[in-house]
Every structure is written in structure tokens, then in C-alpha cells.
Amino acid sequence: MTYTLCGNRDYIRVELEKIKRDFDLSNVSSYDMNSSSFDEVIRDLNTFGLFGKKLVIVYNFEVFSD
Image (cartoon, helix red, strand yellow):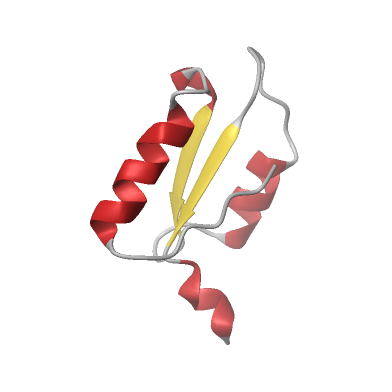
């Protein structure tokens, strides 16, 4: 399943907290695309969570607009 959130920071923070409730915190990864590489994100997306569902959060993906 893919979630895409757009809006102000408060809205996104509240919605992410709701989504995170369904995941074990050991299976939640976050990436800021201003400091992470695209390869890191792809590598993480291609691996399975060991203890259930996996959540990968990507921030600042505007860098892909080029």
C-alpha cells in the first residue's frame, strides 16, 4: 500500500502518527531526500520487514522534480 501526504507540516505529522499506529516501530524507516540517496531508499523498499509490515517514510522528495 502506498500513502502520499501533501499539506502543511501539522497535517502531515498528525496523519503519519495515525499510519504509524499500524506498524511495529522496528519496521519504520525514514529518509530525507536532501541527505539520503535514492539507492538507499530503493534498497530499503526491496527488503522485507522481519517482524511484520514495513513502513518507509520519504521526506522532501521534491528533488525528483528535475
